[in-house]
Length: 449
Image (cartoon, rainbow, N blue to C red):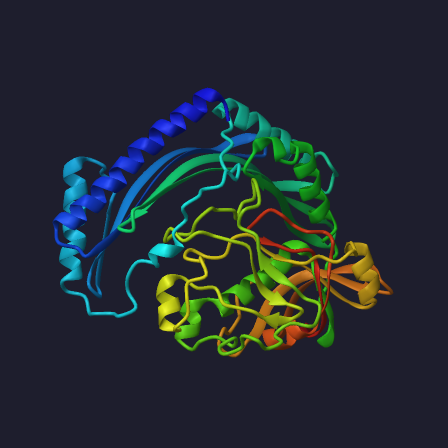
């Protein structure tokens, strides 16, 4: 971040902090026993090019203020995009009025004062990109051109997109907590269609980072998108069978997502999770370790505090296959008679310990089975763990990809799938909040023809 950008960010932070302070004071003046307020301001640019022509150009600038007040165990919330002094007072008054009509809830309230983040580490989350519209269009065209020129069988394109966004969030509450987080997010992606005598196939690739200097090149993104589409040509449907299944790293992240959903407080206190009362029990195969690392510099899931101002910290959720804890905010924690784990708003850089094998090694270890490269639809029952999703991928024999497959479904039960996890690859995908390599599962039902 340049000196000028740092000065501008500091000035904006001061202004948003003043708005939060004014909102909390307005809530107190209305008689609230406690209050919290969060304000955010963001701006960005997004450009999509298709077949060389500019399809969309979007400039966005958004801002919002949300206030939540507490009158004992009664709660009220209101929001506004008007940051004037009068609007702040009116929004606080509206939240207080709502609270007078809500039912009492003993679990409502701020997170404990002693858990507030008092030290804010520098995590390199804000790296602005001085990208104008013409530069974005040029980059998107270059990316799409590399994809379209990769092979004559690339016959169409769904477009290439370049986007950049910058945002600042300030949160404060009646515990005298006031904290700010400035972030950036930069994206380059491309999706193309390949065609031969057997038909058409589509696939894509993308890169997303905090620092634009870390983006994959336009050439790399375009050529990967083309290669992924080309390798799907000639896909066929296989017969129904049971076999090992290897989830490619980008798809394997969904398996961690289902775990987090089952471990989340909201599903647990509603008794709609198969992980209820499972702390201390083996829920994954031995050797599996899953953990949070919220302070990784420049990572997409990093944050110094959660949505309630609670300090984030490294924590282990699964050790050697055994569940160590849940994913809780203060409300769900009180419901479960536990303490918040600093996860209001979700997990932060959830990771599973990678192995030493890359994807070819995992294919060799699997021998015969299915490599999943795309999932379609959502068929997961959080209460029972039943799992069924449409899939696209490749059939593997003797550790080698034989041919692409589509129009199939992979099915099982998450409890069995997790306990049957055989290996995690070294090919870790870092493009999101869930970081994992490819995951090899012992056996699933593959429904085909």
